[in-house]
Length: 504
Image (tube, rainbow, N blue to C red; front, side, top):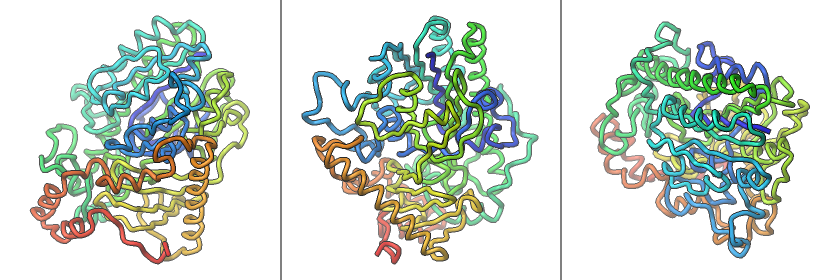
């Protein structure tokens, strides 16, 4: 089997035509949807970038690997203990290693291992092409590496090529000569002017008032021509979202070029093509713009599109984790999956249209806050331990069918639903701890700290990565911009969220 996996950083599904977006951002990606299978409810187990890709490549939850943050002890996989042999194959091997051992040629086109010191991502890849700019690459810089590899190997049997595109990730710096393809299109209706005004008076990294990372560190806004310095109006938001959508469209054109290469080599129809992401992207949800800072719908829901030999076309609306893709791909490739993966194959959905989804999912955020989400039916419950200097409550509840942008916290109106969500979270956590105790699924009792929840280790270590060392700079900015009460809130609790009646 030939497998081309397109890993599009920060790509939220509802900005693709095949997911119902009314802007023409993705004609090439839409081709995959039209010829294959689209997954509506596909979520990362752990966010953002490093936790997500670690879970994806290992097939294991972050609570088992320990990787939930971008720095400190929880940015590296916990040691295997005495189960660690003379190599890193065996029961905890990655899925690229699993494919490689089965005779597949495996190649990675990505700067990600250097961007996040994520050397475990390379485990099982025979070839690695570092595109050289640590995640600041545009599609025109990524494409030549992937194109050269495909020109050499496309007609061979049994290969896996993983290509990492970055254009939907801030700073949204698509070449200016590409133009602004959406400047005449209506701006998405949400957020409203009233919502933006409320957010502007609030606070948080990458919020409407503090849009760029430099505001957090005291360095001011990024010097960018496509994006505004802040979002104080619908006009500002229109300029901002045009830049995001332009990045998607620019990337999509180069994805189309890769498809053209497969067509030219006569193997497009014979190649399993997968389009997905490492996480989504908040564009105003929870007052975060152009980042991925929560365990919520905007951050953790990602696209999954699959086409190729044996794929049943259509739509799957069941709940799946992205770490379920490792055993799914093993099934599709006819390869035995190792026993120490947490993922559950949904290959029968891809080949037969079967309902293979999970009853509920638990998502996690560690680099920008310490938070878990529970996703079931139409509901999302968020449980926050460290708020990442954002206006989060300890428990929040959203009905995503009625409120897809998470604007109305129903925690007081629906106590029975809150109780259900909290029970599911406790059930999930207890199962993961039991697995870690007895060595079931992705748990490893021999791992140092194997029974410790890494989110709480992170709080002990000083909190999420991007806040460390920045409290003085950010509270100074808040005072200088007339938001002294928010500065005092941050100084008083430094992210630690008070218990409330829903937790007793």
